[in-house]
Image 1: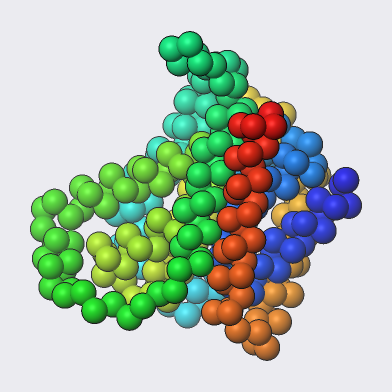
Image 2: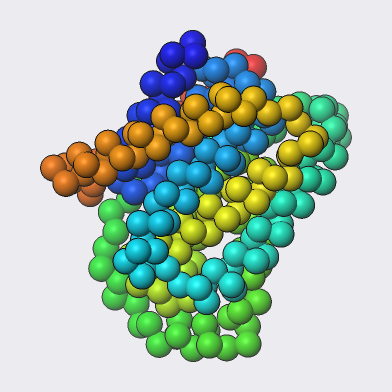
Length: 269
């Protein structure tokens, strides 16, 4: 099963290199269902893997000058504080069995169910065809410059931090639209800035588990290295394959994984 897990992470890296995002969200299901880690441990490992892979992607955009320091300052600070607090304080405080009225659910199942919902949103963002934006941009510009704009962006940053900390995923499908619509970044700059924010959030959130959770560093570094190799291979192949055609297909595959996770944890668990 370890070999299967390594191959799976090589494929995840390959997908990241080909379409520029989305593949890392499959890290948790691979860690849980193929490599046998508990959901809580899987989210911890996923934070490190997502952080490292996003960091590599961010470096490429940094060299091109496609990263906004101002956007990072507005969005990332609230986000990284939230993700650290979630990993350091909230996750350990959640009981192993949660009772809601006469219904009970385990912490591990809750993590995977929330994760499956996140997969649905992520897959839909890849499947749907993007149409040219014909909306009047003046209203968005006025909102972004208004006193209400900055607190709203900070609030969204905290929301992304909560999601990242709880399920160990980057939340790029939320970050990119926020950067485009509310901080008025161009698409490529939004992608580069998003990768930078995801890297900061994930790696900072991962530090919240150091000392309180046993970490297999050799395994973690090995998996991350394999994922990086996949990214490099994907980047080479991407010149010969259209990412626009691959993204919807991968979106449908991701949606299938989300349905499997939800059924596995609710009906078959």
